[in-house]
Image (tube, rainbow, N blue to C red; front, side, top):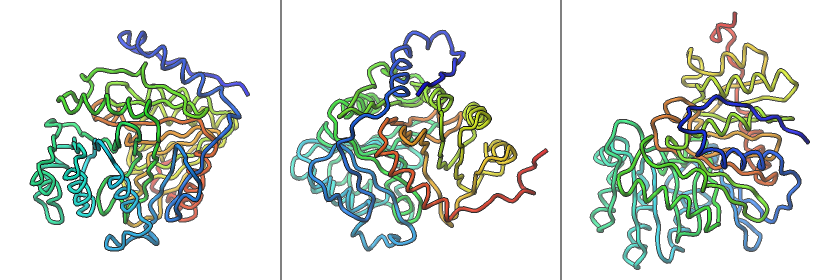
Length: 381
């Protein structure tokens, strides 16, 4: 299977430092048929297998929507992992209001586990005085240090590193809405090399380095785990979308996406170009904001692509793309110029058909709930 890469005009300052990353993406595109040695764990069913290096979880607002009933929820899984930590828990998370998680972190700290948290200023520490919050104050009262970014752009990351070995990431905010009402995903990767990439980013933010001026180590953010190529990207220093567009332009069979916010024209153009060659391009948008002049929904819909608006009365919060049934792109990054150029974000790209199958099943579940856009709202010419 051949793949055509998109040649992108990049700023001169970036050409040298992304060359290795682009080579890795070429390998990601070309690797086909690797042996998979893992199983996934879509909630609420626990993983029945033995030792695995990855697990995938999805929220289920239709059934698991009571924050007082944790069994089977992502929050319960997170608490289990906190209780299992032996040395360190490093968290970079946008917002927080989960009291049971705060209690578990305090218990871990009291048992000698190093717990550190980096959050957003406005949506993190400053929001802690709002109704239903106060969990950061709980942590600080137990001598757990919490630092924020102290700047206008967002510290929008959603990742946790356990014991320098395991990474928890995806789109899920550590909030009641994020876990019990919104559509979200989590992927857990058990890999010290991947954890080291996230630890390096965490250390930068802990030291006060945020946004586009923080150092990029993108050429050190590729690895392979049990035959699965993995690329890690951090916005805004890595200019993450410049790595995503070539993958879209290399699609040969299909592109499925689930998005909270999708306003990046270059990505929409790449999808339209692929659709014009016969590639199946289909996606689900969070309804709010999807009908504006900035959204990619109208141009895709007006071009005749099968795209829908979500059916969740709360929030459709995924930031996921699946390419050719095997390449998965997920993380905290909304597909917008602002997220790519200003925020602190994280992206994981994996070439693994078994992982992709889990995300495609979630796509199918959400597709059934989604609705056709109203033609009158699309302003098709």
